[in-house]
Image 1 (cartoon, rainbow, N blue to C red):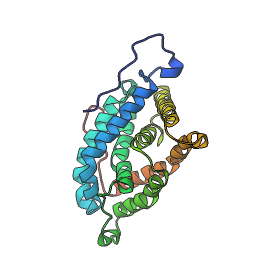
Image 2 (tube, rainbow, N blue to C red; image 1 turned 180 degrees about the horizontal axis):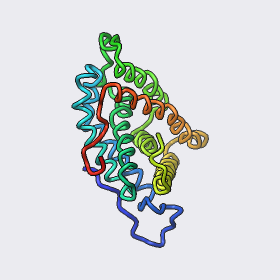
Image 3 (cartoon, helix red, strand yellow; image 1 turned 45 degrees about the horizontal axis):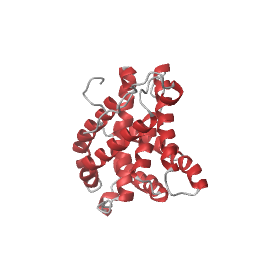
Image 4 (cartoon, rainbow, N blue to C red; image 1 turned 135 degrees about the vertical axis):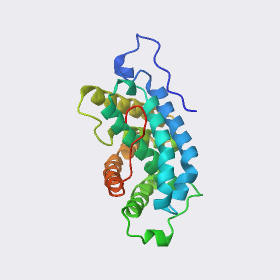
Length: 241
């Protein structure tokens, strides 16, 4: 079970370092996202592998299970208690996207048990099949190229959750999104300092990872179109939807 990160206990800690809405330190924040990412990959792995074999039939059940994972991520992420329902609903869409589609792309790049889509499935003229093909032929090679480890992948998912599209037109959402990004980026940069990398590699690693955001954001927008076309309800019947 993934727990929310511990909130700060020392009121003298600087807001610049720990934020005003994200009431935890950057290391605990990234650790939370790493734990949740590992949990989601383990829980959803078989469903994601099965998805590529028969996407249209397998997506509904996988989506229901993924919705629970995404809802937990929304509920446990530091600072989300400051958000209103429209922002929480948008955040849920982001969390659902990373839990299904970014996890799928990562498994395709790293899991020896991953199976390619059968040729007869690839030949289908369906928007879902086309979308999965773009994901596996576009994002998966980037994951392979960068050789993202579990910490880096979790950080990328966290950044995507908060930055893949604008949450809402209000100051609270903007501040929280910024603090989440800065906290994760700071902790990831510190993590890279502990790795056996050349100095120039350490300096450029974060930029290489965040450079994927444009591609991820485009895939997210395409996912919205696919869901609309197929009448897929991207909504969790929880407290905010």
